[in-house]
Length: 333
Ligand SMILES: NC(=O)c1ccc[n+]([C@@H]2O[C@H](COP(=O)([O-])OP(=O)(O)OC[C@H]3O[C@@H](n4cnc5c(N)ncnc54)[C@H](OP(=O)(O)O)[C@@H]3O)[C@@H](O)[C@H]2O)c1
Image (tube, rainbow, N blue to C red):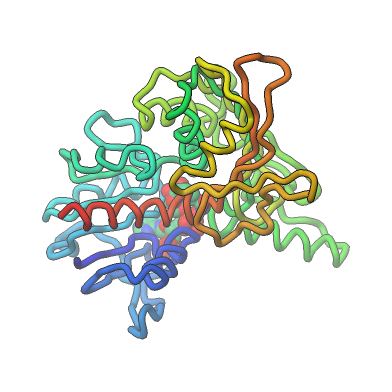
């Protein structure tokens, strides 16, 4: 395969470069694209020095089979035609096409085969908070159908891109030096704070991030499942955490639920409260799996179950999920 990465300099782009090497992804040639800001910069991948090219309208994607695109929704909308017109498959990390009827929204552990039907040659990667949640929901839903979900997220600074992570790191240094803190990327100071606001507010009082969790979960799981989310930014650097409550058609014992999580593809169960063992973002950054723990009965609902879920949102929530889709397509070819 001849492949390309659009947005190579970004948080997700850099993780894609690491993963291509780590997983020995079967590519013949790799080309890197970015805006004029990163054009000309170089990265060494598998011993080869590659230069970032500026993304422009034209025929640069002729001969490319697959493009991983992680450069924001505006860029995806503007350049989708350029990227796909010569036959390249575009795996898009942005929100631009996720809810389009003729664009599959894919998490390989849940609906891999949806990637095979892609009339526009675009496959959308879901929102990071949704990806980790649906991997966990699938494990339970296979045993007892889930009717509804409540979720509160604890999302790291890097969910807002490389500059979000930088802002938190800068605030730590400025605070230690007694300087005034720079607040640009987030609506408020993130250091020593939690901010119940990710993406913009919509008319119903939920944010777009919260509505993504509602809409994307239903599309991926092909279900009328109800999802009510509260998305919160917390001062961690990397990996998102989620407190999830599910209401099930048939109540499950915690033992059954733990067995379902332990057997599921892409999930690691860490659930040993007696030894203070449960998933935490600090220790799970850079890992591939979705981690689940604190599995317990919901005291407020006899059909309910509560659990805690952590995953590296730049890996499984973005770059790894995209690469797993590409690996699936490669195996099917
Ligand atoms: N961070 C996450 O946890 C996460 C998770 C899931 C999905 N995503 C999605 O993935 C995408 C990238 O996110 P990120 O976190 O990697 O952001 P980021 O760190 O801010 O990087 C943005 C990337 O997009 C490139 N870019 C911006 N405008 C461009 C243009 N006009 N033409 C070509 N390249 C352009 C930038 O290149 P320059 O350096 O040249 O400007 C940079 O490489 C976004 O759509 C985001 O919603 C992010």
